[in-house]
Image 1 (cartoon, rainbow, N blue to C red):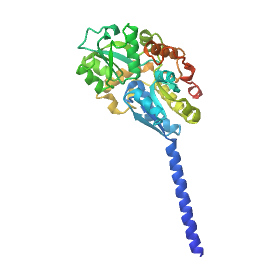
Image 2 (cartoon, rainbow, N blue to C red):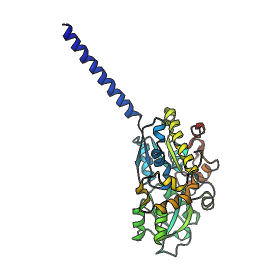
Image 3 (cartoon, helix red, strand yellow):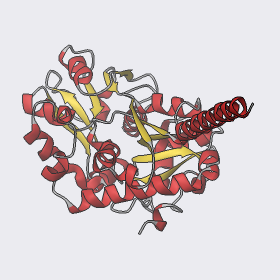
Image 4 (cartoon, rainbow, N blue to C red):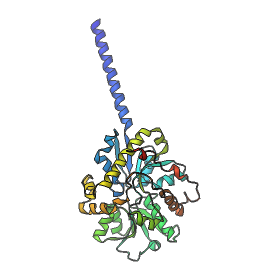
Length: 337
């Protein structure tokens, strides 16, 4: 009898341990934070992959999975669908979404300039300013993306009307270059390292440069906070501890960028990001890394510029009451020591 009881107790204990182990695994799985990046090979979103490479997520006790998505607007849709907890994308989506009744906020501001450039195909030397976009087909990463926002703004500012230009989604990197080579687009907006690749081959030249704060102010009329980590406000409110740890990991990454050379940073990135030209990648990063903030804090004049840009052409935003204070928070980045 004792033997039977002992066997029964052993089996019961085994079951309990198995259940506890399963519960622990389930809890760990639930703790995973998935972040969609709008093209993590783009230098504008470099802090995402760099934080992973430096081990800063693990240092904070976080289990973070980075997913790649070519266009920021698609990453935004994944967030709203609940498929991911965060997006590394442009802050302007936070403003645009509030106009649609959705509340998302930037919790770490990576950059204070878009890092984008409007490139013109060498086949079309007649395009000398955005006013010459009329009747042309312009490449953007995706419809509803930040490159689309900025392209439509430049066209509107140049006096063009809706319908005067056509924007088509061509992604970045190889797909963008192919679209320009095949004359599917006559001009288009893209980032590094695609910019340097096109300039090097002579297939395109720079028309509007937004890789620095100074050139961005000239093009857009003010500081334009761009790359950021944004999340749904409701998720942040319910997960303040995780939000703080994410902010800590990314602010430490921004400090690393600010205190290390472009070559040192490039050494931490996956080799395929160089697209066969590490020297070119380093030069582009050296020229553009000044776009990144040093502390993750939203530039004070930035949100107003973004609202002004979107209000210029967007029917969604124009005339809407937007509470900019609900599109970003500095609560977490200011706690990082």
